[in-house]
Image 1 (cartoon, rainbow, N blue to C red):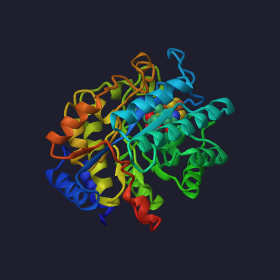
Image 2 (image 1 turned 180 degrees about the vertical axis):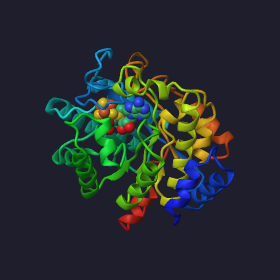
Image 3 (image 1 turned 90 degrees about the horizontal axis):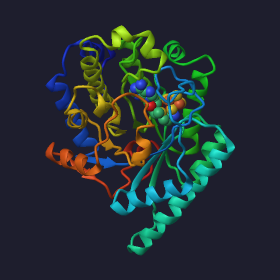
Image 4 (image 1 turned 180 degrees about the horizontal axis):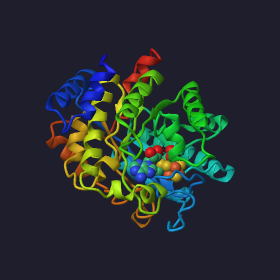
Length: 361
Ligand code: SAM
Ligand code: SF4
């Protein structure tokens, strides 16, 4: 649906979340992607990271993090547990590590997951499709994206973080490159991935105009999936230290939360048939208990319950106060809100098939 930038700006500026915005987003959602909410079982494979994003608790220079990397067997076993539970799509995530040993391990993990989940399908008398796999391992070289794709990762999530180059440069040290980020997103598309991107909403230094331009960036880039979410503080990061007064001021998170819900609604209205995640960060904004329901009402159609082993969850601390609802709790709340939780389908973004003129069979 066409909607003017001025209208978007006015809505973002206004206080509160208007009912008419949510109703329009919900109408478009039901027409274009239905009432469904697809599940991805999330495994956070490693919190080791070579990058130093100024907002993230996993940044390389944060010495207060206990670093971990799951073993190959641990990841494969978790993946099988998720699959046998009935959740047919997985999301594998880690800090960024452009390192041959880690990369080879990732390939082995993905091949094993595909092979073993296909066997389960055959035992169940089903078509051997295996698990749907979303990867999110940051910026890699093109050949690495190609190899991951061949091994069985068919969706990739790489947030642009902000589409405004100057802000990107303020949020990252000078060895990070906005150009490389864009290049990676282009490669992913050329290789044939279902491509997801997104931004951090409400991060200090961002303007309403920036958010409108982020939405236009998603549209221009013809993105298939959106994984955006609110900024949440992490005390061991430069952004928190620089903007402490603003971040801890009254009403900061109320505003960030409202903006996040509005961004989901605008994305649904503008982009119609893409997949949109109700992110864990959205569900973790301090003081917002009904975030999951509101995110879905605004147009989100994907959730990613965390399956990382309990012993390591506390160490994958991107921001403070991360909430982890179980898939059962999520399903219950989704049903209560009037939507249909879907565990046993890949739930690929319809937009991907439209832009490739393919049928989703
Ligand atoms: N390392 C990979 C990457 O950066 O693409 C994947 C994992 S990274 C932890 C996933 C996302 O976490 C990033 O894209 C970033 O937007 C988000 N993130 C990091 N710090 C955050 C914060 N303080 N608040 C909200 N989101 C944050
Ligand atoms: Fe590393 Fe990703 Fe965090 Fe940046 S956002 S520091 S790349 S884990």
